[in-house]
Length: 174
Image (cartoon, rainbow, N blue to C red; front, side, top):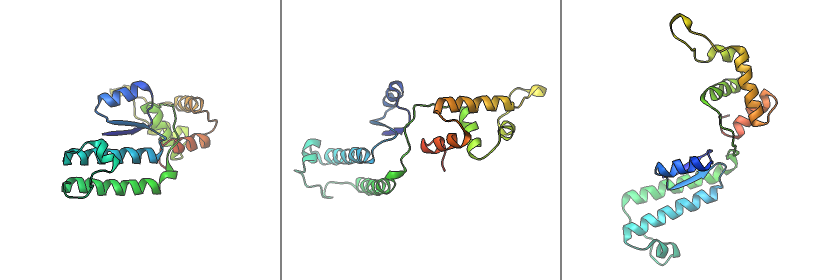
């Protein structure tokens, strides 16, 4: 199990390993590192199925032919080869690492902002709060405060810069 995430804090990595991750890579990552990890996993799996030590397998002393490899392993190898090629082809589209963590409300505001909505339009589209007759929309002032907080956290100073940051860090797709 491989976790590929923007969350790089120690407590995030520990939680990932406790959740069962064998590998925990943070963005941005070098595609060659991921490819090396995938290659090692395949070699170890082949060695386990053939009853060979993984070290011997990695040194190339064992015939890596299909004689001891199951169909499921061959399928996995083919899928991983295809994935590796996709990664090589798209290696320039890797997102930029950020230590900024946005909460759910900030993400919703950011997504709407990236879609080109004004503060008033964002306020109208945000989930309503309260119950019964006391249901309230989020105010335009509150939306502007959230956007300003994101400016401060990201080091941006305009909506255009914030949208560019969101695309570069993978918070939104372009």
